[in-house]
Image (cartoon, rainbow, N blue to C red):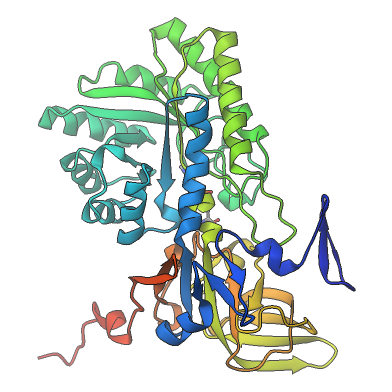
Length: 458
Ligand SMILES: Cc1ncc(COP(=O)(O)O)c(C=O)c1O
Ligand SMILES: N[C@@H](CCCC[NH3+])C(=O)O
């Protein structure tokens, strides 16, 4: 149990006492001698001077460290595996190029993510294509690029894959995505493994079996195995082990009935991260160890051969590597009610608080260890009462032009950003070993008008 002592302003954990700041500093993040937040050896105050605000900053060493942790247990236990980054969490050319070198595979869910991967020169055989409504042109692009695997979601897609593979006489590897009937304990919008889900073939009603049987008559489709994804921001291993047991029992049954051979078991992503000090995510190694041990024990019991294990972490690779820096602007104090601080971004660059009631925390990056004396609620600048990033955040007495750093914004932040209120998207800066790299430029007003047509045009 972790608890916060409001008098001494520290968190008491198992055998540890930490300030809020210390619990949120991951990877290379630290408070430097100038009392500034530093990431990747770069002072965030300098980053703000160079790139302005808002700006997303990624600690690239942290991304690599997380990727290593995912790969490590499989290597140590000598289990064949692929760690496929679920790029919906955050995709960019530079990130794909970094991950290509880290021996990570890539899960893409749209023509746009696929196009980005192709432009980044990502090795095509390590790309897996997801999605519950892939279009014919998206599938054609993936076939042209000869990607490694399609995760087939429904009969509509299966028929299209069959037709296109025959026309092209091109072999295609597929996994069947099934909903194993497991509900992860998470927000209902990000829970996907339950029966009533728009994703995948339902196991209980026999849809998945029907898909498997129809693939047997498709000459260019090679069925590698099964896929399931139970949800997101998961803090326990039980959901994964329940899904494993269900899928392997089913695989055994299909082996006996149709000679089905499970070569690959893909368990999706969903590994949770810390957004606020109270969050206690499991260590990555705990997840991977539980997954491997559960697969090993089930296959032993069922007398199946060991499949390759594939996983698809998104949030846990990039989430806590990312920090958003904002400048504080207006303040509003309602006596006996609340103090608001407004920042120069908000729901346009981070929709998660408004969409999922997601909780975040932050510090003043330019006065990081100053004593907290006030409680502020952090408002965005969009014309929307619901554009609140954080409620009741303890901070030092803040002034306009202070820099607010919000932690753990690396996943589903930029990726879900919009131009609501015609607010341009912030830039993305990667930092590592004391150097910064502009991975995505700040959008300009002209960029936003690029597709607009003027009725006054000649
Ligand atoms: C099929 C699939 N794989 C992987 C992920 C990645 O999830 P997360 O970012 O929670 O790891 C998702 C998103 O929830 C998903 O739908
Ligand atoms: N976008 C969601 C998670 C959904 C992931 C996609 N299956 C989030 O921000 O938490």
